[in-house]
Image 1 (cartoon, rainbow, N blue to C red):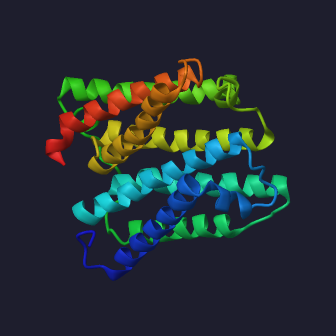
Image 2 (image 1 turned 180 degrees about the horizontal axis):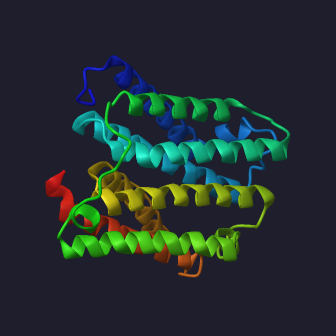
Image 3 (image 1 turned 90 degrees about the horizontal axis):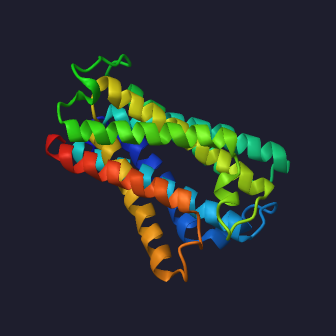
Length: 266
């Protein structure tokens, strides 16, 4: 498992995967159970919308664990996931400070995931220095490069947009209301956006990474499916956030292009 005989690494990654699976399950598929664990959470459309989003993010993390289970431990996975989980710890602490502290289970489990992933990374016995590839993104495939540059530019635009319109995800969606909890969820997604940019810059310097490209495609396939279902079932195209749908569509195109152009190498 994970193409390593190191039991500590195997156990750490297995337990981290269980944490991702647990939160993916209850957040994406049983939001009522999740909300009931937090007395200060309102069971409204806005909160359910963001909770499902965070659950799907955990499926993306879990896909990276599965990838490494077949392909072996991968530095790129840790470059993305460890900062993402550390920022999630910060985000949860901020939420607990606002609410007065109503449930510490999430904080404990996310901190545990950070510890497990950090131990697994140190057990790899690989350097923390990242040698620059001969070419940008480590490939001469112009189409793949264009897709990866497109992904990076898109994520930077999304990050910059947050500072001009922090509640844009709610203001641009007629089905959602701007709430204090919704604003904090939007901040959490911005933290994830920062981790994605770190992962893309890592690949820009050291070369494309199979685990990261696969995780990105898994995420975009899930969200592109949601966009298509919403279009198919809505009475009109104005029943949602067109800017978000555009960002997801562009991200899917970039991610799928990079994956299928480079998959033979990983």
